[in-house]
Length: 264
Ligand code: KIV
Image 1 (cartoon, rainbow, N blue to C red):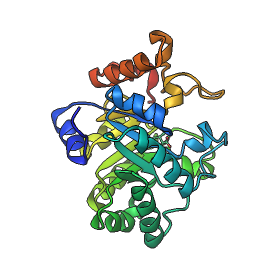
Image 2 (cartoon, rainbow, N blue to C red):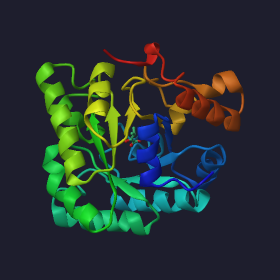
Image 3 (cartoon, helix red, strand yellow):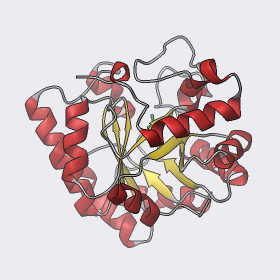
Image 4 (cartoon, protein in one colour):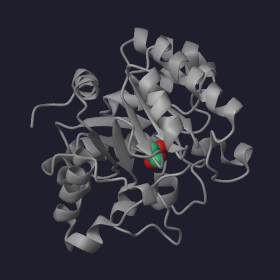
């Protein structure tokens, strides 16, 4: 498979070809994901929950993400890798640039930040200095305590309109990709149509430009809670490479997610 870049992802949106992404944290799984054609890997701060056993993502440090980004890059030399910027590592423009540079040096192709218009200056500074940015709107887990739990976002009109404005502001600032998490499908479709950058959904329905799952959800080993938007691909395939391939096929064909995985 040809190396994926930000230009490939943009072209996929323009041509209506779906992007399949997974979280990854180590070399072995990253290599498996690369070998089975996954387009994008995210070193998510979800590692605070699925690897470290935390109840949220707030305990994750930039060092943690840099370490796992190195592991992922070692296993997937040719795949597009996004590194998450942890809680409170992008509060000021200076902090943002310093921490993002550490993640790029660890092997990332792009960094991801949670939040809307308030990130405008930071995203502008990053892109001017050569660091590609992925935005993240909707249920942004670093704000779980402000939301009062892991709750669907954007159900009220005012909040939905603000999210569309935020998406457009992130694009104007220079973001080249956008994750939409746990929002109504109609809103995800509206945002996807109102920006020219690709959107990647998780719990955002099938009308985004691509999908992402936490890898533990793909194989049904998320401790305790099984999110409505996830699917255990291991159940129907019986082995790990086949599960990854089935996920890729179902995302690219539009078979996943189904209506049973979406929110209204
Ligand atoms: O940290 C993460 O894994 C994420 C995905 C859920 C998009 O941000």
